[in-house]
Length: 54
Image (tube, rainbow, N blue to C red; front, side, top):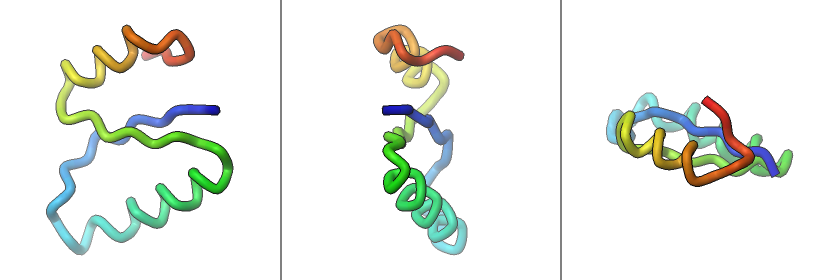
């Protein structure tokens, strides 16, 4: 399984739909999508997952 981190602040409704469509399309290809809150959250994700690199 591949992991993709998307740095996106959900809440701007007209911009959410393309992200949701991308999320669904990538999940159907066996990708896992994560949404880190900030830089530190992303770094923790990278440090704690051997399959990720930044």
